Image (cartoon, rainbow, N blue to C red; front, side, top):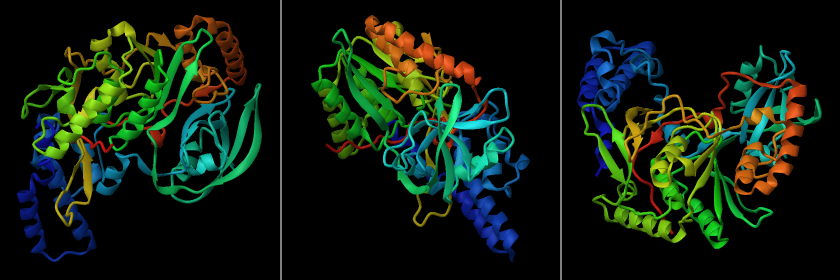
Length: 489
């Protein structure tokens, strides 16, 4: 019930759109008039939805103060509240694809480093997605890129060169690696972006056995994708079969995604899982009533459709069979972790206690808000745009959701202080190393030696993260509270 009430929105405001269409059709139009007319139709559709469901709907200017002939992106920006950092508008097909992890990409997650107080900038590779052009070319975490299409990146040109990197045309990159206090060039590689590339939410998983015999489940989870529940359940089946003692969940670059899959993951982690226990609280605008939701409701158990109820029951049964029933969880989260990543930390705390949800890394983005995807459902579609507006503030079952400046870790560690970056899942990674030392203190000598060496390299390079850079592949996204996904097992 709670999800279904939002799906009529794509057809709200249609009367206004039809009247505007009839009026505009009565006049002869040149090319510019045609575009202005279509803008008016689109923007009327946008405003009809936003006045109903947008969290800050009462702050939207009155129609007479708005220019409906603006392009949809400019118009949308004009009606957003100053506190809104995350709502966006996009062509509908691109919006729907992006929310399922589909994009045009070469498959690299990247950061930017400025070196030695100079104007030189290098791209530091965070990871290469599985089966992406970058991975197939041999690029991996810890590598660096010094040039694109033969041009060295600098503070003055890196933005224009990244436009090439994020585009659709082939380009070359100069791959290098860090060796001591030097950047050593390797080979120049051509990368061809792949359209409709499907990212896998699970980037890496492993069972790590420590010297004292502890079995630690490790999961690097990069996106909360409602379309990939089976992969998550399969990994937990492996963890369950290995009889693990601890869990480290790595969300360091996870910008968020669907609440349905986030609730599944929380259920798999939470000890003594009960499906009818409240998990989340929603705080809407005055057009809607605030409410709490149980796990079962989030899974679609209150739906009027038999297949959705059956799927919810299947989810519950899978969670109960695969739940690790551990007293604590170690979560790696940084200033790149947002949305559903933060929700997972905040909403697990009432079940495990604050001290047993151990946050390692950095202060998170501070995105305690949820959204829905709204597109024109008519066939054929008459509005080519879609919107992803913030419609709700999110809290845990105890009513706490006040973290607009982010969640602060118990153990503060900045991976930029340690170079080169170790492979994902390596005990030489400073964030994972801290979790493993907390689990098994006998690892402390090795961790200290490795971290000291990496810290010395970072200091010798005078490496500093380029402020304000946001990787297109890892932008923070609103918690998507849209209709639950389906489990097929």
